[in-house]
Image 1: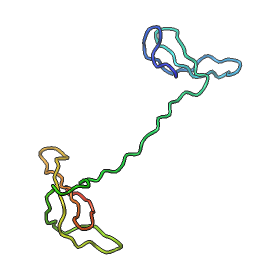
Image 2: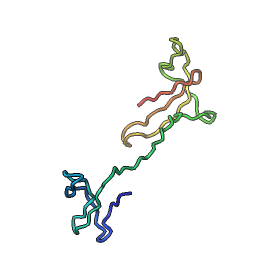
Image 3: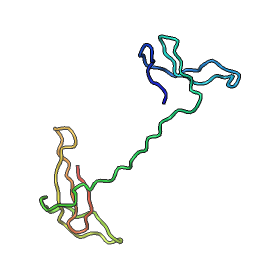
Image 4: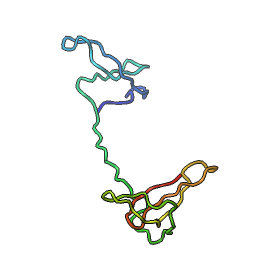
Length: 121
């Protein structure tokens, strides 16, 4: 693993071009110290591969809605299934303050019938 700090003066290393050699006339990249003559020549590829996990999409209202209130939704559920609009007018809901305090809270809904989730600002 390539160093990030100088082992002599503990300053942060920067990447610069090292002097050329017969094998590499243009020179190689090197970690160099700006305050002392220390150089760490990168004679091979240096990288760290960090596997990233894909974040799972969270269910806005969770699986258990028994403790959430059910309310009549103005305009009804916007959900569709197989091209047929859901006719439900009831949904679980809760509110969160997602923006500044002088603006109204955001309402989150989940249809009781088709489980479509949406929010209104």
